Length: 160
Image 1 (cartoon, helix red, strand yellow):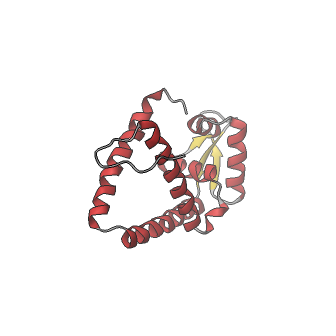
Image 2 (cartoon, rainbow, N blue to C red):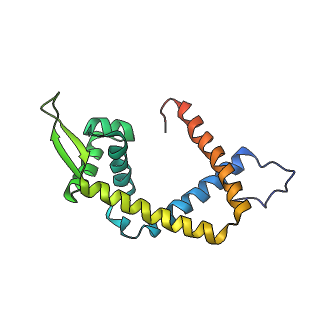
Image 3 (cartoon, helix red, strand yellow):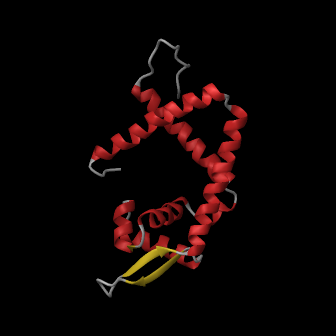
């Protein structure tokens, strides 16, 4: 449970901020999923895997499982669902014929672009309506701090 707001001279504890940021980011993510509309075709895990394939290029099931910190069996299920929807394509691995290399299909890339556009559109509209210029500057400053937290979190040795 969150305490009462702190005054401008009082600095909230790291624990309180962690609770607040977690709650707000979670609610924001849920609102953006709803705003994306047809996004329900993909689970959060499927979206993440598809985005990774887009950003990093083709990968094996094992490499994707390691990158997403899941078991290969779980990744196979995720990829199977994506394949059923035509979101990914498989080709034989040139280095190991027993494996296949997975890549995002044109359908998958189009779907990702549509999801991102819907989320960005919703968020842009809400920011324009709810925040004035000084508040948008404050939010931009907060983004720098949030990015620093994300980057600083990479020093945890890969643990989640």
